[in-house]
Amino acid sequence: MPPTAADITAAVERCQPLIRRTPVVDTAAGDLGMGVGAAIKLESLQYAGSFKARGSLNNALASDIPASGLIAASGGNHGIAVARTARVLGVPAEIFVPSVSAKAKVQRIRAQGATVHVTGALYDDAQAACDARAAESGALNIHPYDSTHTVAGQATLGVELGEQVPDVDTVVVAVGGGGLIAGIRLALPRVRIVAVETPTCNALHAALAAGDRVSVSPAGVAADALGAKQIGALPWAVLAGRVESVLVTDAEALSARQALWDELQLAVEPAAAVALAAIRSGAYMPVSGERVAVVVCGGNVDPSDLVAD
Image (spheres, rainbow, N blue to C red):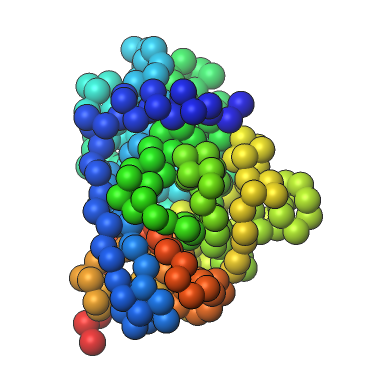
């Protein structure tokens, strides 16, 4: 069931002491290769390196944690966040990741003290293995997007953004399984929400085109973060008919990522740059006077392939 306004308020109260209020950088037309100015929400600077810290923390704080601790499946960012939550709360964690996960992300999960299992080719394979292990161990299984507490936790970003940019008209945000965009949609009900994906990581775009959830085959530069085979059932209940959807290419995402490094010295993963890529490429064209916010959602990346101009 989608979280209520009361659920989101409770999530803010629970999580606020243990999450970072990430900054917003205002840009002008011409900055970052955009034709318009925008407010850039730097959620890549969140604890654990992404917005996932919010949802995992809210799940844990809203639940009774068994002695076996926390367990999760992840392409990387959710796993780092759950591992960090477990460390902060002093409980054990097991994280299942697919082989597509970036080495830098797997290393960061281990650095938080969690036990890591690499299994299967894609996220859904890791989730199946995680679910089987959770049934055996009794650990609290924290889903990365298809959970009321997860979506309520991600909604805290929307609440925060609404306070930081009170005149915002449109929020542009990347989509994987849909937890973040569903949370923002609920937190900012009167704001236009633009979903951004790539042609090979397009679970929401495909669902909107078909009128129902469908399976896709994730691939490409954003697959470790946006690689859900289907949009989550709970996010879909929130998003169907209530968001706009655009696509950007892998090359456009990588170019936007490089721009964030060149101009802001911000190292982010390709998936975190797709929202910016939508503005840079014209996939989404704001109208004159439109106040746009762009969410840069994750920074768990090996920056060795970024070069200065």
